[in-house]
Length: 99
Image (cartoon, rainbow, N blue to C red; front, side, top):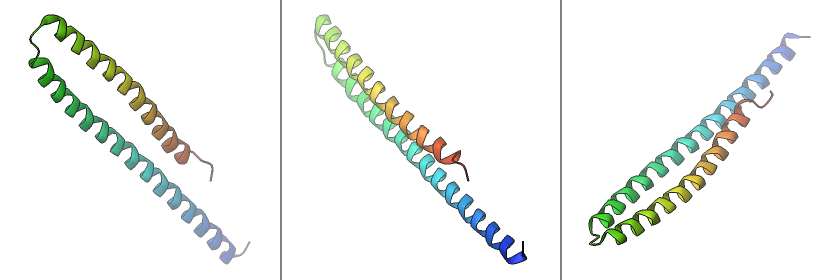
């Protein structure tokens, strides 16, 4: 094997590894962005929920509103978790893809 062949092979391998790293970094950025969006949305929902619960006049209305918020929170948690799992799986799949 000549020196040029070795250098060409090493260059291709280096380019491939750099490409894999860039893909992995992009996936991690997507994951961080998703966590940030979820956190922002949850903070906004919490603020709105506290305001709504504070305005309630009757205990029955408070309980009904609280149950509504809990149901919405559970549904959001399930949806958000599924999205995070998808992004995490994509990140690890790109990181551990064979060379």
